[in-house]
Image (tube, each protein chain N blue to C red):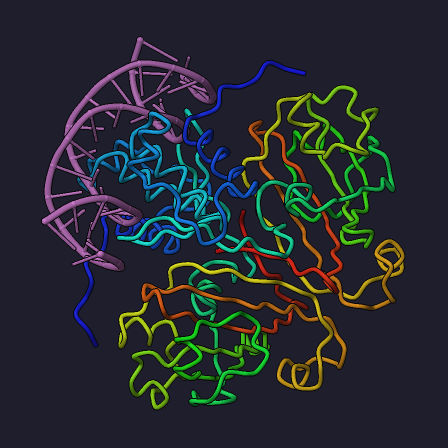
Length: 238
Length: 238
DNA sequence: GAGTGGTCTAGACCACGCA
DNA sequence: GCGTGGTCTAGACCACTCT
């Protein structure tokens, strides 16, 4: 573990309000306290409060209405994998179980990698792992993860079963995901995919190719995610 | 046409910088003028400038680096349909041709609509249209659009061929899209879809179900979009 | 009219990258 | 050490909604 980082106030308020919404302190359709009330409650000024609310609004937790206030929005019943937080926190409160297919191993980068790599990444080698994620005992995601082996000692021996990769990166290496980009396609499931996701061959699956930036400007996290959307849609805001 | 609305300064600067990036005034990898320089150049203060840059960053046009500056980012070569601007502006400079399959008609809302409707929407009836969008002569999107018939006189007789629906809504009815949400699935193409998108039956396509909010709080725009991702991926940021 | 969110100003201090 | 972006304050005026 490492010493904690200071957390900006707008981020702190964002987390508080988000937790209150998820915990039902503020329910769907409720009016949040007004911006001025939040200022007083948490000892901030309006721009700071507004920054928190702006993020909540972008993430779909609230809707702002001029002259009325901020209203808690219907929480998406689907899987919000288009958010930044990674798969684990993307499914809300539902239980997500993980099976490791390939434990983290150090290897060469694939020859035709889905994103261009920097020289530094190429030289560092690649940490590789495969996981299948289950939601209510249905396999939903088949994740293949790649990241450069930059200042991540002992990562290949850590236990991933109950923690998300994001948690481990944050707790042990102080790595935070800042943002990312992705390409989305619909493809037929090949043999490997259909086996892991319990689908028929050639059944359509969603394929996400993601590149995530971290607070280490040299370190990126790459995922190739195959997603069974038979029962759960992928949800996003824009 | 209607009288123009006043445009906030942060929005104005956002549009200017966005245009400069798209026009190549600032090229990929270039450093944008610093925030303080932009303040002087456009006569704004830093929070205002930062609001513009923040949006540019969210939309993927720039990356901000503390201590260095804002760097113009690789423009996505794929189709950025996950952005707010609608299909037409989502494909950058490439030519998007549209074929109208069903001209706008007034009808009843479908019995099992993909999103819940307000009482007002149900009573107003539904404007319905179908279009196919081509990129470089390949059919990419099969769009089915629905919106409530609220204060939209004569919309069923307007010409959609060369203008986007969004342009018509903005120019004639002063309707702007503010934000939206969507569900994404991978599904097999049925007969109708495969005919319009020139695909084989059961070939995987992306299915987007979108609900968009406008500056009229009672008016929402709904789309069901079937997307051929054989050649072009859908691009998004998060 | 009162209260809400939307926009904007004019400063301040800090953390980071680079020369 | 200097300039960069990151955070924050303490105000201001406006547009909108509701009563």
